[in-house]
Length: 96
Image (cartoon, rainbow, N blue to C red; front, side):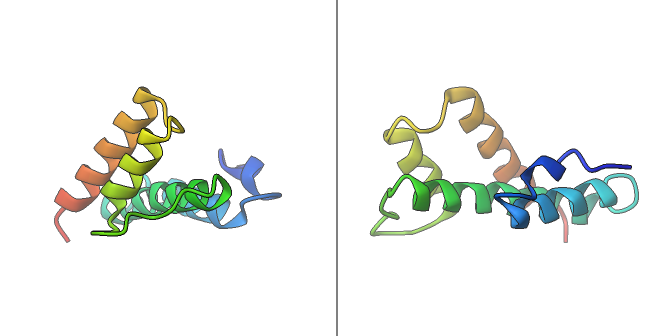
């Protein structure tokens, strides 16, 4: 079956790979699925910062602060910010 993330292969193969792995783990290993989705979101934020030339936070360069920086620049819609936030919180809370 074709991955839902296959469209990313041409320009963002790293994201396509993480998305595909998350799909593979969806029903067999929820923890690994969530970790891959968290990495997908974090990588997407890092790519956005690089492409849009947004400087990383000078103090506490965390994923949460990078999301806030993109939000301040108007590069993330509120609904997307909510998704990134929920994913980040779920990944941090998941038992390892």
